[in-house]
Image 1 (cartoon, rainbow, N blue to C red):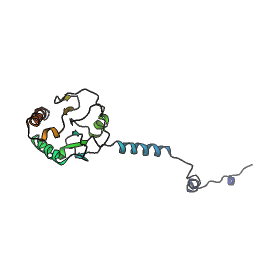
Image 2 (cartoon, one colour):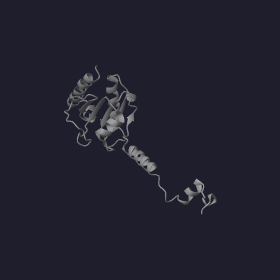
Image 3 (cartoon, rainbow, N blue to C red):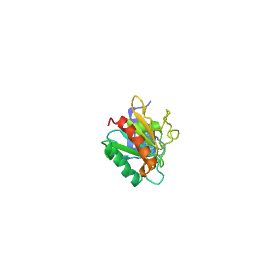
Image 4 (cartoon, one colour):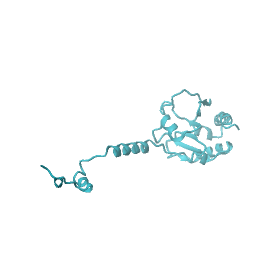
Amino acid sequence: MKNSSDNYQLPPFIIANMYKNNLVLINDIVKEKSIQQSVSTAISFLGENKKNIVLLINEKNAVHIKDDNLAFLNNILLACKLNMADVAIVNCFNQKVNFNVLKNQFAATVYIAFAIDSAAIQLPFQTTLYEPFNSNNFIWLQANALDSMIENNNEAKAEKRKLWNCLKLIFNL
């Protein structure tokens, strides 16, 4: 016959010390993995995205954007009554970017893609250069590279004109 004095209970800290290498908290591991995945899939960008406008570029020799292209882009933004705080500039050359991650991270109302391969970012729809694609939630514009618009020649002027005509429509200018 057992009496109540035969039931010993160890304090929780002793049990934890005894099994510290054997017990695993599954919920913590799942949370840690999801945090790691969200950090690893976060897209790096320049700007503050205050007006939910994402500018996608593809520049090999720049973390975000080359200085001359940034100056040109600033002029475009000013003409659209915007500034760097209003947009997010994403360089797709240095990081893996796909459309679903873009949508989830930025929730943009306007995407302007400069020389971006639609298949590389898994764009789920077809686009044509300088023809805005209107969705229920956003506008997508595919344009040539910023480099093609910087020079002071007829080809660059034609590219700028095509871009400007689209921007006027998109931003009601």
